[in-house]
Length: 556
Image 1 (tube, rainbow, N blue to C red):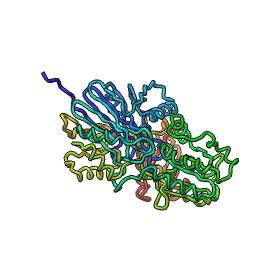
Image 2 (image 1 turned 30 degrees about the vertical axis):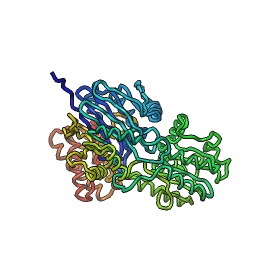
Image 3 (image 1 turned 60 degrees about the vertical axis):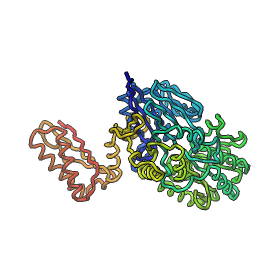
């Protein structure tokens, strides 16, 4: 009798059609393993939102099948969702590289997560077997953070390789990409490749991280006074480059920004960043040194309002102000959607007399951690997959990546451009579409794991664009009539008071209430009538749709 082997379902709860919240799921009849659990940072059209995480409903409904979470590396879009995930479902064990494991432990402590979480560190020699369903091995890749890995998942139905974030840097800061290991996996046979698509629009190769050091060196050679370098706190390789140049130029290093301080401290403890103790000073010591003896390393390269660089620019920082002659280095490129924030910050800095250096033709101050088109071609050649699923990217990036695969010989029908929730099934080395699971966005305001619904977000957006009108009505319930005319309060829409629009809106509300009070009416019916009458009148007169909030009070 032939033993039945369960097919393997593959789907993403995040990471497709977006840059962020990478969460990939692999499911058999009895087991689920996850690769990464990230967050996405909110765009400007999400007022009041701190993070966007995946909808974990499917995992909650199948919680007994979850066996493990594997982490490819320690960036927020791959580990930031862990505190929310483990409060939603029980994760028996998290497998993570050494640095990512340290960052996760700190994140859980910082989030005051009380659940007991087992974290097991892995390296490129590790092998993990999950029941009889998944045989998991790892290969080291190069990225903008140390300890980044791709993951190979062998199943009874075939082999899956998920690259994680990578670039093929032949002169990296740190260990080499294990190209020979990837090539061996490809020679043995990869059924489905899931590969990073972030730079699929960019031709050529992504510049090596070591090339950035030359641009940083040139800035330090020419800067006459203080140097303030802003980059991602998680870009540990970049931070190491900067501190090496600062030490060479006999500049003291001051680290600002909570996340920067945390990551640098952890990275120094584990040996990923090397800074002599004598070279580090605190911000209250800056006044003891000449301007040309100081380098400030801080967060805020994306123009974030509460990051260190923005607070310095606004004059909100306790010990640091922008001084004429300061050289400000943005060692990053704006994330899509952040360009306006960065431009606003740069203008503020220049207005205060700073010399701002950004990545460009004049200075090479940033190198992406993701592969450009030639590296994607090389990855596809080395892996030589039968089927291909681009991941980690907005839709156009996934489409470009799919076209690259087809250009080097992959059949179009073997290439899958998926949305979050789309399910692929691997069975007997064949891959096909197989339905959809729930995979919406959940908006996090603070640490509330329940998140905000899309209705709340729409309400916030409506208030931001069209304002709000509150209508207070007092009803004598015994006589079934209004005590007085409705009172209007407007915010962000019109001046509350005796304006033509408000007077006529008040009349529309009054007429609607009198109409509904001809018969015995509930407060809900009164509210509905007022809201409908006022919103229709305002829309007709102004073509605007402020939020209408009726408040009905009982007076006897």
